[in-house]
Amino acid sequence: MKEIITAENVKLSYGNYEALHGINLSFHEKELTALIGPSGCGKSTFLRCLNRMNDDIENIKITGKIMFEGQDIYSPKMDLVSLRKEVGMVFQQPTPFPFSVYNNVAYGLRIAGIKDKELIDQRVEESLKEAAIWEETKDNLNRNAQSFSGGQQQRICIARALAVRPKVVLLDEPTSALDPISSSEIEETLMELKKQFTFIMVTHNLQQAGRVADQTAFLMNGNLIEAGPTEKMFIAPEKQITSDYLNGRFG
Ligand SMILES: Nc1ncnc2c1ncn2[C@@H]1O[C@H](COP(=O)(O)OP(=O)(O)OP(=O)(O)O)[C@@H](O)[C@H]1O
Image 1 (cartoon, rainbow, N blue to C red):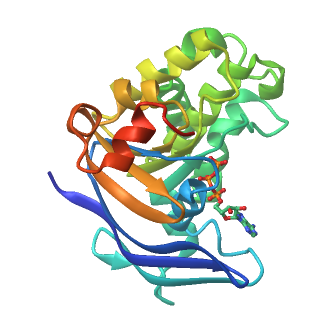
Image 2: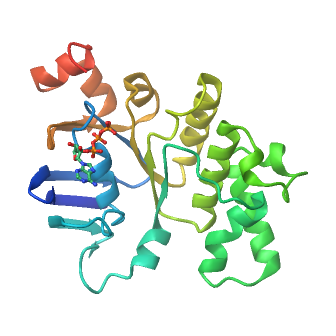
């Protein structure tokens, strides 16, 4: 399986506090990787390094290398707009903009300079279909996206992320604010979408990681403890501490 993103010895400090102590981890194309671990272990910090979402935080220091398709994303030559087009992101709280469903999904396309109305129409429809929210929105494309239910809003956000045809989508606990039915709908959608896109997802929900992730990476106290095929890790983890975490011996 081809590696699409590789992190090499990634360390990150917030001021004097080192939150990541040297992470080495690769992500494979068209797989879903789950990042798991106790609260505060650095999952979101690490996820946000992968498309430089941490850049604007004051007093942050990042060392090591993150290669995306062979390019060092922290190189001064890297164009952030194009990086974030290729490596998109969906957050924990559904965050549609306060305008119509159509304009939400078209947003990134317009930023990318696409003006062709027909192409935008087509991409909006395709993306809403891929995110399994077309049926519920097709007659309401002008309705304010924020007036939909939480689960629907999250799927609109997924459609918005997919519209620019990213290669990788980062998901930061995308279902933790949703009810169980909406969560399982999003899981099903991700299972379908990973045939086309690469996903990296932070989740607190170990069952969810077990259901949807091809690869799972377990972090603790800013270190990567182990990573590998999900099934193997859940059945026969290499380290005792991973087994203790997966068995709920600590949280
Ligand atoms: N902007 C920030 N400034 C200073 N410290 C931060 C900042 N963001 C996170 N941290 C600290 O870095 C560590 C890792 O936080 P992070 O949010 O990455 O963990 P996490 O594993 O995603 O946690 P959770 O599962 O609770 O969301 C924590 O100790 C946190 O307090």
